[in-house]
Length: 145
Figure 1 (cartoon, one colour):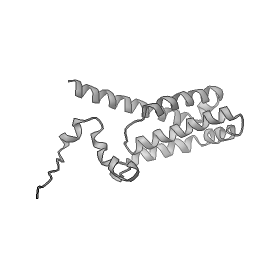
Figure 2 (figure 1 turned 180 degrees about the horizontal axis):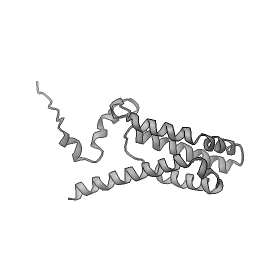
Figure 3 (figure 1 turned 45 degrees about the vertical axis):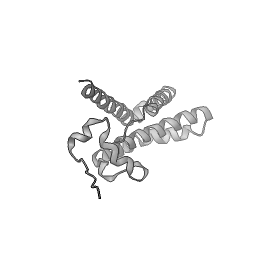
Figure 4 (figure 1 turned 30 degrees about the vertical axis):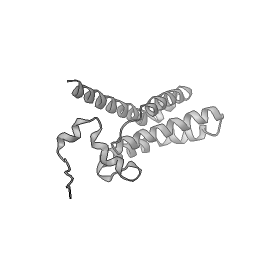
């Protein structure tokens, strides 16, 4: 019988961008407990607790015009998705990040006092996108030379 050799060296995970996510893809629903960052979960929970009144206010806005309800709803769904991606260290979905940023910005423009109420979550979204953009740039620099 032929034996299969498993290369578990740290060098193998650096070869391809997001190579360390291979184990997460093979787990059910793509989530592997070993890839979860509890500190990030704590930060996300703190931001959502601090932004509670803004979340409640946007929930009341969902009762209004259906077009604005879809905008606010998508902005929050995109934010929660970005947070889950960040906590579980999964590869970024850039379509979600761009459309979520547009939806979040438009919802804050229509509700100007909302920026003060959801400020921690707005900063968290900006940081998550910055974090993944920086990670993508560093991966491109290592592959280019």
